[in-house]
Each structure stands twice: as structure tokens, then as C-alpha cells.
Length: 200
Image (cartoon, one colour):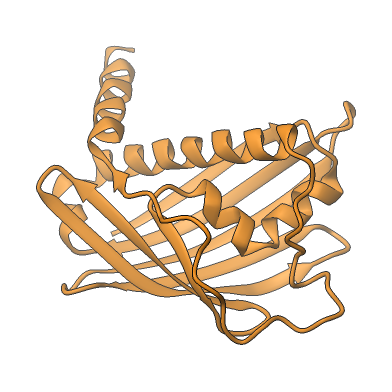
């Protein structure tokens, strides 16, 4: 099953800070519930895993994310991620195109276009709910990224793409344990959103 996502959001932070965040997977993954960065494979390749729990069903994916294209001048990025379900036959693949532009208020506008192909346990919930849950997950990511970018000073982690030093070939263990992603609250929100659209 293929799902497409098109979203835009505004962050009250300068474009240089937002761009550095988007090109630093160590920062991005901290805003993704259930995700964990496990290893830096190369300057643009990263290994990681995601754990999703829906009631009695738990699906864990392990895979790799690659910064396929990075345009520093236009602040455009293409990320390709793919993973296999641990202990199962499921799989997930995502191609995401993102861009950042400055706005008149001194903040930044971010645009994200993504295509996600999913197979496995989670598909038993049907396309409608999976799409709604994907949108809810994106909203969670935006909320956490906005808080991080607007309230925190730039951290010590530098973007591996903006550094003169090559990225390490392996990463140390994450500083914090990954948060398990529980989808029941997200499913409930998705059902409510779907019902509201139906009433309209």
C-alpha cells in the first residue's frame, strides 16, 4: 500500500537553524516517537529502528536512511528510508522531499512531500486509518520539532554535512532510550477526524 503526504508548517526560527536541524539525523530522530538512531554508516547513511505498538500488536522495523540529495544553496533535501519488520514479513519504504524557505517574519516555512510504501501487520487497519495515523504522527513530529527549534539554543551536535570533518563510521549508543510508539491514542484521533470529515 502506498501513501502520500504533503504538509507545510512554519517555525519561528531562522532558516540556518532549521536547515541544520533537517540535515542532522541525530536531532531529527529525537522528535520522532518510537524511532532510534543506532549507527552512522557513512556521511549520509544511517541505521535505525522504529517500534510501533497498536493494542496487542507490536511491529518493529530495522533499516537504513540515506540522505540521497542535499542542496545547500536551495535548502532542499531528499531522504530515502527503508526497513524490514523484525521477526515478520512486513516492510516499509519512504521517499521524502523537504525544503525550507525564509518568511517575512524572520521565521522559516518548511514543506514536506513524502511517499510511503507499507506492507505487514499494520495494514490490517485499512488505508483510511493508516493515512490518518500517518498525518497524526507528522503532527507530533512538527510539534516536537517546533518546540525544539523555537525554545532551545542550537545544540552542540553539528550537521555532518556542514562539518569539515568526516562523519564517524559508527555511532555510540543513543543518549536516551527510544520511546515506544503507541498508536491507540493516534487511532482514536484518526477515527474522530475521519468522523468529522464524514459529517461535513
